[in-house]
Length: 142
Image (cartoon, rainbow, N blue to C red; front, top):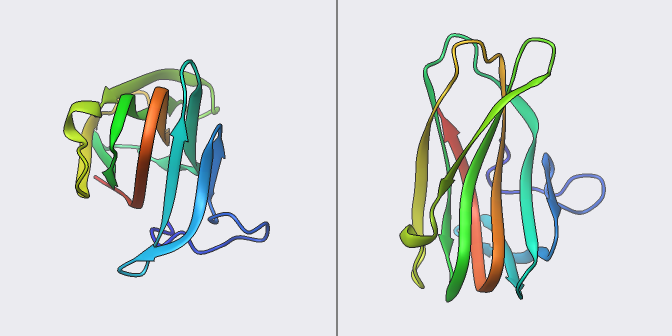
């Protein structure tokens, strides 16, 4: 998964891509490169783990980050599900805003996998005003 966010060919973390006001920092905490975001309303930003994960035969997937923020309108963890032909068959979004505080802590959500899902795409989504949010150490497991 590249949890340390080692740089890829273009400088950003390999296997991750962001849309919006996301900054891939030079700062590291315990060997993990951080990512930060500050934005105003009505903006939306999303950070994606680019490779899909084979979820065949699995009943659930856990997904999250170590994260903190000074203030946030809305933060969620998202899992997009795909069939064997890579057609989207649904999405599950878990709001985590209430679980995130000014102190770093690991926030992980559990997502039920539809029976006909072959792959899952993972992301974190930010909406509205976000003040000094920093996150790192992505984790996913069954």
